[in-house]
Length: 297
Length: 58
Image (cartoon, rainbow over all chains, first blue to last red; front, side, top):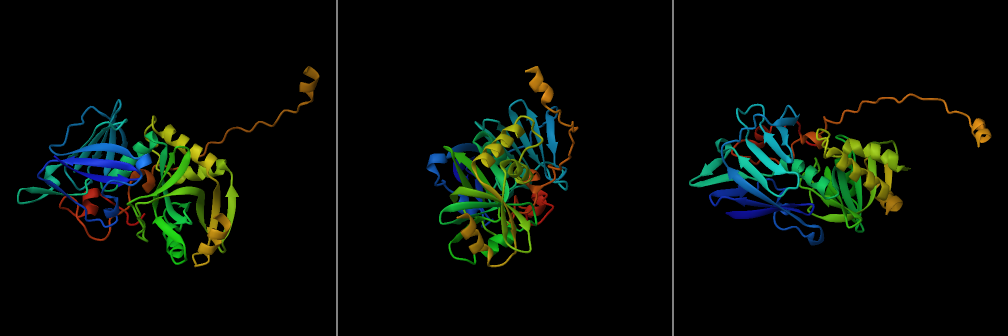
């Protein structure tokens, strides 16, 4: 068995694969995330056993959620199953089995959908989005973290997360910030926020938005900022109660899982209690960078 | 104590209001939206088909 490590937000997924399986990464945004992460003090190691095998029969298991698109989720006690079966496929393309404590993750690929070259089976990143996101939702629930739909930026080693749903302006804002001096964009679409020894840290992810930002880096989180379109740049501090309400709309919360959902909500509560939050009304021009650095850093 | 309580005015009762929030439709929960850079394949098929992605961008 050979292994390869994918590291996101301090979670090191060590993928053990059969010798005849080759893992290729064709997505350029993922390349910085392969290899051991640098967050040694916050690192968590997860072993993933990769197999090419017949899809397991889940008849009789309780389905807790069905996206009606590409995946569905089953639970049997402490064991969860993620089934990926796009509508146009007759069989699932992959199934992941994991216990809630992540002590043993098994990722089974359907050989029918795996290409081969001579005696090698060629597999594109088996943890590619959305599977890694779905696993990280549960992992972060275990480890005081959340996944947030937001852009993340660093200025003078201080982190700001700009949260908003699609079309809120995350990528637009990111494009303006990078034009100025001193700003570094960790992501223009998804960030992971973790409480590490009492300090909130923001991590980039391999899931960029339209602006294509995906840095495998971290920064201490200074502020949470909720985006709104505006005629001028304006910041308004909001209460933790308001911030929590806003946060629930942009956080990856497994609403379909009654056991894990309240844990994630609790992490959201602790985050808004600890980190100041603001509403930002902004105009998409170069003035936003200096405005934010003056007001928040 | 009883006299003090008499002086306190009762607050007007407001029935709790139920508000329905759609939380199961966003990419944050569903994992939808194509995150792939242009090109690339997944298990020998185009990734958008293989993963059943329905939306571009975030």
